[in-house]
Length: 165
Image (cartoon, rainbow, N blue to C red; front, side):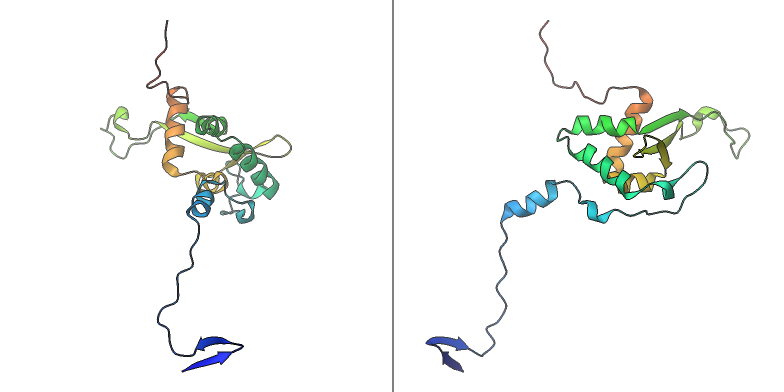
């Protein structure tokens, strides 16, 4: 079953399983840490109404926002950039199904609008799913930022810092 080709023994029998190719652990970690690539930029939804203009956002706007967001390595500064693109408003009108229901029992107390800044400087309103796809941040991280914006808390946490007076 073995043949000699140019002085090297070559086996023609089934050797079993293939060897698993090794990759350096840091290559895997580096790919997880790096910012998302600009190649996967596309419009997810087809909203084109007064309130949501997802189709008006161009790939250059995506790239500009991602570069601005991921150029900064600090998470707190990234959160402040995202907070500048989010507006929260109190809900003024409620229509409960049950007329006896108290208005304060409603679970939703505010509404949120998400924006992308265009290359001309205009703020384009987009839906939540499109905003998440463009910025590549998680839903829980976005929800935490939105609640801090609504409550008026600073994005930076002061927990654990000891300051001398």
